[in-house]
Length: 201
Image 1 (cartoon, one colour):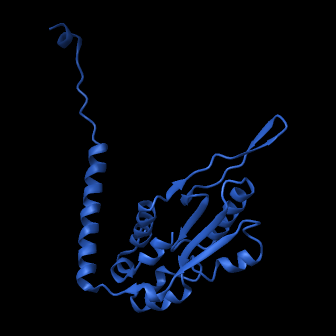
Image 2 (cartoon, rainbow, N blue to C red; image 1 turned 180 degrees about the horizontal axis):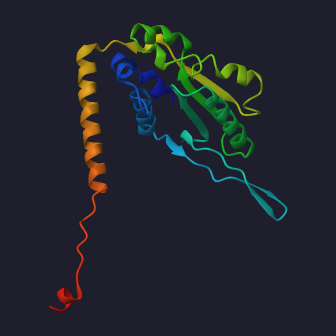
Image 3 (tube, rainbow, N blue to C red; image 1 turned 60 degrees about the vertical axis):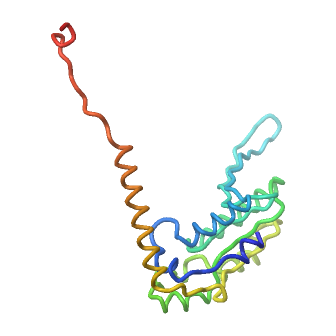
């Protein structure tokens, strides 16, 4: 985990390209964790009382490794923190994890977003580092130890307009390939109808 955090840089091109679906920033972080053996994990949980069993569903953890559950909240609605903390609490009580980790953005990054004209995409009601702390102090994580990390301005890199242009072209190429795959998967061969005369020769 420390290796991923140390290697990460917040690129200007990724901020400008973000929009719709999972952002390039989240995708890059997820790939980095996966490269270090962290995988998404869904737990099948239930509560048993005598002979009766009751489902106790939890949502999938973004990254899991060595009994550590990590959630990436780059730019979701802030109630996602409630979901994450409740999930950590349940999984800890069920002895499935030893610690929960939240990786989000520092609140002061808003200045950079505003300067780049992307401020409206990152409002105060979205996930940033000031949001989980009142929940944690209110006991939102239960007995589960929770670490929080924030991506700060120190990690911001202006990688230039050429990088922005290259990212736009790469995204357009990926979108075109995805559209072609979807079109191919939706293709159905024309139906030919036969008469009795055709079948009898």
